[in-house]
Structure formats: structure tokens, C-alpha cells
Amino acid sequence: MPPSPVSRHAAVTSVGHYLPEERLTNSDLEEMVETNDEWIRTRTGIRERRILGDDGKATSYMATEAAREALDKRDLDPDAVDVIVVATVTPDMFFPATACLVQDNLGAANAWGFDLSAACSGFLYGLTTGAQFIESGRAETVLVIGADKMSAITDYTDRTTCILFGDAAAAAVLEADEEEGLVDTVHHTDGEHGDLLCMKGGGSRHPSTHETVDQHLHYIHQDGRQVFKYAVTRMADVCVEVMERNDLTPDDIDYLVPHQANKRIIDATAERMSLPSEKVMVNIDRYGNTTAATIPLCLFDWEDQLERGDQLVLTAFGGGFTWGASYLTWAYDGQ
Ligand code: UT7
Image (cartoon, rainbow, N blue to C red; front, top):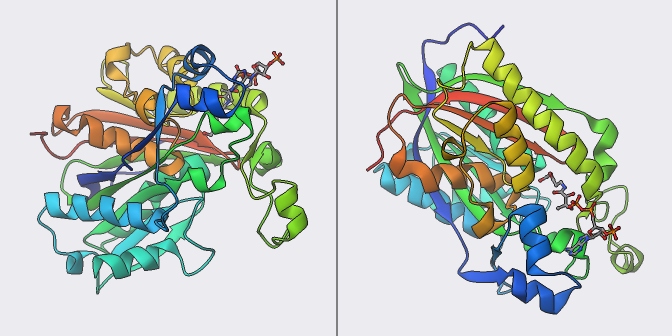
């Protein structure tokens, strides 16, 4: 059963984004590792990704730019922000939290904030978390930001991972709405398979040493084939679970907003939900897998076409394992 209805809905009232200028294309990657454009396109759907580069800019920079754009579009002063949630697996540093750096960059004098680590499910977990503050009346304005500089933890000698990831940030403003907003959420965690997608080095188990660097433990490690098997079933299962417990038919759903890890996983999920491709947001071809940023980046790209009352199912699967799906109704008309 879905949760009982709340009187204050947590609605997305604005979205902003940041994409670095630099593009890393499939043909660029052909020069770096043994791969080819056709393999990457047919196995993943990716054509190019964005890279932030090495000039000292980090995740907090992209998160700040995305948040600033979201606030400006809604004519909100940074002082109006109560809470900042930054979902990321590539924080600028272990601490202070990236949310603290964003708070300072924005000059959001009245906000407190924290980082949330749920890999590719980060934005979805952040949305559920941020919504609690709005629904309970503890906050009026919450920023939920998905931001990852994946190039900082990608091994560009490993063809099985370096073709997948890109850098980006996107942010959503949450405010109260009497009718529209987050309706239902299902989340799951399964730590048993954490080793299939992880970064082993640099933490308290394997603090950084010359040896951990020599062993490339400071990079993403993924058993792609195994992760694919879990992702493709669990993402579809959780979407069907959300549809069933909210009595949603395929006709009721205006858009599926899936995490962008692999076009084949997205297609399989849409097929299980009986959704035609025009109802599925896909931008993996242009940005690759930007981890916590993929879902809000889709919302940004499709914002013009969205109308108040549209019914959206958001879904993600990622390292942990973490996965879930959220059902929300859109709160404003695109321009
Ligand atoms: O976002 C978080 C969750 N992550 C995911 O959902 C990702 C899930 N996994 C995937 O998307 C896919 O498993 C990958 C895209 C990572 C890999 O695709 P795949 O169809 O599962 O390929 P595979 O790992 O089974 O490898 C097939 C073949 C292998 O060669 P052999 O053993 O058949 O001779 C690989 O060595 O493709 C080879 N291969 C490559 N060939 C060209 C692996 N990477 C590449 C490459 N270029 N970049």
C-alpha cells in the first residue's frame, strides 16, 4: 500500500543544470583504449560525455552552478534555502561535505546541508529525503542536487568502465504545493553485492598508499555483466511495484525518467511497463552515465515539454546495490 496522503506535497518547482564544455567522444576513446564507436553505441547507447577537466574545478563547482540556475529561474534568493542535499560519490573531499561548500558558494546564509551517498540512486534518495522536510513543515525550500565528477575516479586505461561515465550536475528546488508533488516512493538496498560496483581505495579500509594507487584502487571497479543482470530486472520490478500500488496504467504515466546507465536497461524497463519510447526520457547518448546527475538532468532537458499535473515515474539502480522508483506529479508548466 502507498503511504497515506500528506497535506503538504513536496513539489519540484524549478530545475537547473551544469554541463562542462569539453566533450569526450567515442572516437576520442578509440585513441585511448581498445574499443570502437560501434561497440559503445550498440552496447550502451552512448556517443559522447562531458569532462570537467583538470583545472582545479570539482563537484562543488558544478553543483553550485546547477543550484544557482535553479534558484534564479524561480527568482529565489539563496537566503530562502533551508536545506541543501548533495547526492554524490565524488565529493570534493571526504569532509567538509560538498553541501557545505555549495552553501558557502551560494551565500545561502540560512541553509544547513549534508551529502548523501547512494551512487546512481543518489538523486532519488535525495528527493525522498528532501521531501520529508517539506511534507513535515520543517522547511519551505530545499535544494536537492545530483552532482558527480566521474572523470576524477575513472580509470582511462580500463575500457570496461571509461567508456561509460561523464561529469555533470543538476539541481531541483522543492517547495510545498497543495496538490502536486511526490506521491510515492519505493527504495531498496542490498549490500551483499556491494563489491560488484565500488571504489575500494581511499577509505578507512584501504587508506591511500602508494600500493593502493599502484593497484588502481582509487578508481571505479565494476563487474559490468553482473551489474547489468541485477539492474535490468530490479529497475523494472520496482517500477512495476510503484505502478501496482498506485493503480497506475501505462496510459496514466506521461513520462518515465530513468537513470541513464545503459540504453538497453532503459528499454527493458520501458518494455516491462508497456511504455512507448516517446514517453521515456533518454539523453545517455549525449552525456553518458553521470551517476547522481542523470535524473535531474533529464528533468532539465524535458522541462519545456512538462505540464502541471503530468505523472512521472523516476527510477534508478546503482552501486550498493541501491535502487528505487518514485511517482510524482509535476507542479508547473514548461515555457
Ligand atoms: O550506473 C550504475 C549501474 N551500472 C550499470 O547499470 C551498468 C551495467 N552494465 C552494463 O551496462 C554493461 O554490462 C556494460 C556496458 C558495462 C558492458 O556490456 P556487456 O554487453 O555486458 O559486455 P560484457 O562485459 O559482457 O563484455 C562483452 C565483450 C567482452 O569480450 P569477450 O569476453 O566476449 O571476448 C569484453 O571484453 O565485450 C568486451 N568489451 C569491450 N569491447 C570493446 C568490454 N568493454 C569493451 C569496450 N570495447 N569498451
